[in-house]
Every structure is written in structure tokens, then in C-alpha cells.
Image 1 (spheres, helix red, strand yellow):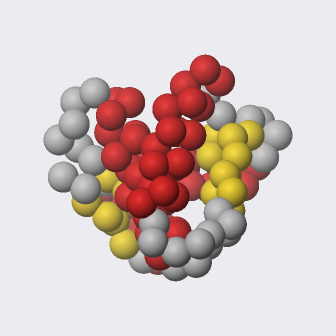
Image 2 (cartoon, rainbow, N blue to C red):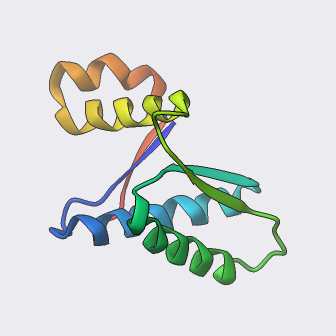
Length: 108
């Protein structure tokens, strides 16, 4: 699992979009076909614009799809949320999940 991190950006939404852009580009470069994100209702449009821009910049023809779902109905979304929290908390929490984190991608 990779964790994307942007700490220099004080505005949460801009930091999220930078992380989603990095994630989308990495997934496209690896030939991924699907991305599922936790829905944030009206804020989903920001994610969609960021992902569309990443797809347009990608030089290859792709059938990349993305969707937003409610994390209450998709329990697999709990795993990355928990891992990201542990990475952010640091200390013994970080040590507990180090074996499943392949990389922390620092976008600063």
C-alpha cells in the first residue's frame, strides 16, 4: 500500500487534490483500470475534475474508471483510512502498520 502525503499545503482541499492527482497518475502509469474513493457529497466534483485532468495528461489510451461510494456501504475503504491515520499519528501507531506500507509518497 502507498500513502500519499502533502503537509506543506495548509488548505485541506488543495492538499487532497494534490494527493489524488499523484495517486491517479501512478495508477494510470501502472495500467490500473479502477479507482474507488470515499464520497464527500458535493465535494466529489473536485476529485472528478482532478482525475479527469490526470487522465487527459496520460499519454496512453485508457479505460480508467473512478467512482465515489459511501464508506458506510464499502467496508474496504476503512483499510486505507486506518492506515493513513496510523501514518499521520506516527510513533507506535506507525510501527504497527509499517509491514503493509510499501511507500509514503511525499508530495511536498
